[in-house]
Structures are given as C-alpha cells and as structure tokens.
Image (cartoon, rainbow, N blue to C red; front, side, top):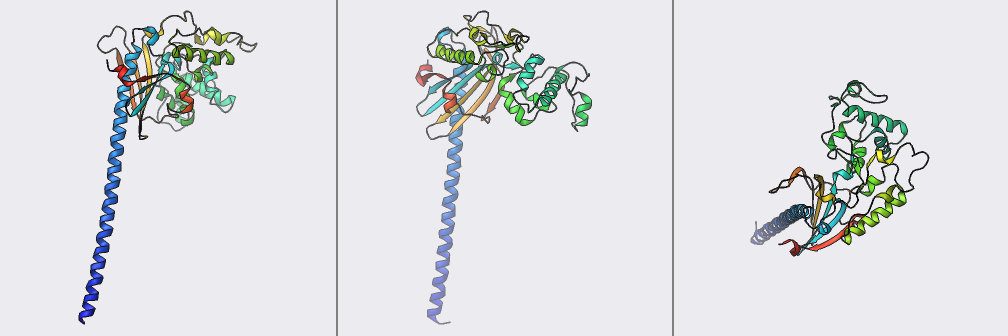
Length: 341
C-alpha cells in the first residue's frame, strides 16, 4: 500500500471517528435535555402539589372563620388565592348538599338513576339492585339483585346487605357500569345521613331533585352566589319550590325528599359534618396539581378540628377549576399575604 493510500485510509478512519463522536455527543446532549426536562417537570409538579396542600389548610381555616360574613361557603363556591407565581382555586362542598345513597328513598333513587338509565326497565333494575345491596335481608326485590343474581352474573361476591361504606362501593352493585358511576359520583355521598340540605346543594343535585322549580333553581343559584360575593346571609330556599308542583308531582311532596329550610338565616358553618375540598394549583409556566380531600369537622375539637377521611392527589377531574364554567362559581379572590397572619 502506497503512502498516499495509507494517508487516505487514515483520513477516512478519522472522519468516521469524528462522526461517531458527534453522534454520541448529540445523543448525550439530547438525553441530558430530556432528563433536565423531566426533573424540571417533577419539580414543578411537586411545587404545585405543595401549594395545593397549603390551600387545604387555608380552606379549613376559612371554614372556621369566626366572622360569619367572611366564612367560606361550602355550597360549591370557588375561592382563589394568588401567590407570587401561582394561582390556586379552592372549591368547598358540604356532603349534606349531596344525595345520601343510604338515606334516599325509592322515589329519590328513581329520579337519580333516571339521569343515567337508558330506559325505564334499566332504571327499575338499578334502583332495586341498590336497595337490595343496602337492605338487611336476602329477599330479592322485583327486578332486584341478591346473592343468586350476582352468582349468575359470574361475580365472586354478593350484596353486603348493609349500608354503603363509601361512594366507590356503588361500583360493585350489579348493573352499575363505570360510565354510570362517573356520572353519579359527584351527586352522591354516604356521609350525610339525612335528606338533601338545599342550602348546600350544587346545581347538578338541585336539577335532580323532584318538585323543584327550574326557574327557581336559576334564581336561587344566582342569589346564593351574589350573597357570597357581597358577604351577605344565604338566601331562603323557598323560591326553589314556589309554584313547582304540578298534578303529577302532587303525590311526591318535595319535603319528603329534601331537608326543609326552616331557618335560612341560621349559620350553617357552625354545623359539624363532612366537607369535600378540591384545590387546584396552576403555576405561571402552566404546570398544575389537584388535591381532592374529604374532611370531617369534629365538634368541640380545639387542636385539630378536622379529620381527613379521603386524600387523593391529581385525581382526574372532569373539569378544571380554572375552566370558564367553573369560573362562574368564583366568589372571592385573595392575595397570599392576606393569610400570612
């Protein structure tokens, strides 16, 4: 091999090595950028999550606010706290404003399930299956479901024949699909133990309850939001039922299905009970985190008046608290320093 050929061969080798080094360095740089992006994302998510957790403490503090006019409403209202580079929205919902599936009678369950059933036959089966699940006997209701029906369906469990312990337990009832459960879950509870308290009921629950005037619902929701914005007492719920009953509803009196508004001026925040708190933090760079917590207020407790029942990070919310629809429920906006003292 001549000297010129050797030099040419060496040059080719050098070029190949340089090309390989360039590819390796590019790959390394890309890998580092990806890792840095992942680390940055984790950091941002952790930051948003920490702020969402701090919002829980703010919500509990505002539920205990001694000045009634400044106390936060647990009726689905949304509050916003602005930090230096983060916004956090907090939605409060008292469980007494939902339909208790342990307490609801057959008529109310029919109305509730009617929202998701495709026909009357499916509605009847689902209602009776729910009633069979929570009753204390093994006698199957017409179109209901007890031990044999679950066995025929190939399920390796049977009805508890006791009260529902959690909302999630409803998924085990024969015929309750995931789609049905996801539609019903925002409307129902197992922590109320009473009829629906209209003062706290969100729009979705009010629209389910029989015997309520649709126009009255709109008026009441508007006045309830305005009263929260202007720090006024909650309005009377009388407008919800005024002129609502027609001939078909006359035999299904709403007072049998919902909690009567005997004293709208009473301070509902002094009551004990379970509250759902949803906090969503959004950073300036678009990162976000959501916290969904259910807490129980303990009567007479001084050091820690709230007990956590359920804690869920980044639950897949159907709708962000920052959406246009949820913004309609925004009643108050604060700057973070207002809570530093």
